[in-house]
Length: 223
Length: 204
Image (cartoon, rainbow over the protein chains, first blue to last red):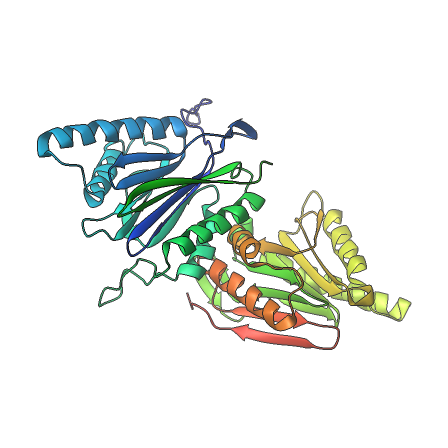
C-alpha cells in the first residue's frame, strides 16, 4: 500500500521577480508588480515591496498570502521593539529578525523568497538574501523569484562582487553611482520581462539613501 | 534523476552582421562527478553549417554520427553542401522518427545560408523547430543563458564584438550552473573564415 498523497496544496506561486543592489551610500530595491496564478494574471498593480523600518525595505516573491502574513508579523515585532528600545530597528537587526521569523516556521514554511535592502548603521548600502526557511547572507546584490535565473548571471557579469570567503575581507558594495545602479536594474527587468512570463507589467523601484526613501516606476511589457 | 541533466551542458548561438557565433561549455559529467573538461559539443557539418547538441551525451554522439552519414549521402547525390535550413529540417525529421522513444538531446543549428545570411535555430528533443532572429540557447544552463543573452545582445554586431558578447554571456551563465562550465568553445563564422577559440573561465 503506497503512502497517501495530498491532492490539495496549501501553497501557490504568484510569480514575479525581485532585485536589490547595495552601493556605497545607497541601496536600490526593485520588484515587478505582476501577480499571477498558473497561466493567469490576477492583477498588474501589486506591490511586492514593504517598508519594514526607517532604512530597511523588503521585497518578496513567491506566495503572496504568506508574504503578507510575514510582513504583518515583522511589523508587529518592530512595533514591540520600538516600544522597548525607543528607536527604529537597524537593517542588520531586522535581517536577523527576518531569519528567525522564517525559521520559526521551519516545518510549515512561509513560501516567501525575500531580499532585504537598506542602509546599515554607518550609512552604507546593505543587501541580504534569504531562502524560504531563513538561511541568509549579506551580499552586494541579489535577485529572487521566477526571473532570478535570468537576472543573476547578468548582475554577476556587471557587478563582479568579490567572494565573501576572501581574506582580507573585501567590500561587497558596488562602486557604481546611484543613477548607474538604477539604470542597470531597469535594463535587467526589461530583459527578464522578455523571457519570463511571470515578470512584467510595471517595475517598482525603491531607492534608500541618506536623504530618505523615494519610489520610481517604469512600464514593462504587458504580455 | 532527470535524464536531460545527467551530463550537463550549455549551448548558445547568436546572429551578427553577416556572421554568426556558436558556443558551448566543455564539461562532461556523470551527475555530480566531472569526467572530462574538454568535451566537444559543437561539430562542423560543413564549412557553413555547425551543429551543437546538448543533453544526454551518448544520444548526442549517436545523433551526430547519423547526421554526418546522411549529410555525406546528400553530398554524393546532390554534389553540393546542404543549406542550413535543409539541414535543420533533416535534424527535425530524424528526431521525430523517434517520437515515442526520443533522443534526449536539444540541438542548436547555426549556418550561413544563401547570400551569406546567418541562420540559427534550435529544437526540442522531438524535433519542434524554433527559428530565431537574435539568439538561441540550450542545455542545463538555458535559463541563465536566456537572461544573459537578452541583456547583452545587440543587432548587427561585427565578428569581434559578437565574439566578446557570446563569450561573456556564456561564461556568466555557466558560472551559475553547477553542471556546466570548465571553460568554453566559441566558433565565430564569417563568409570567409571560421575562427575557433577556447575560453578559460572558472574551472569548477
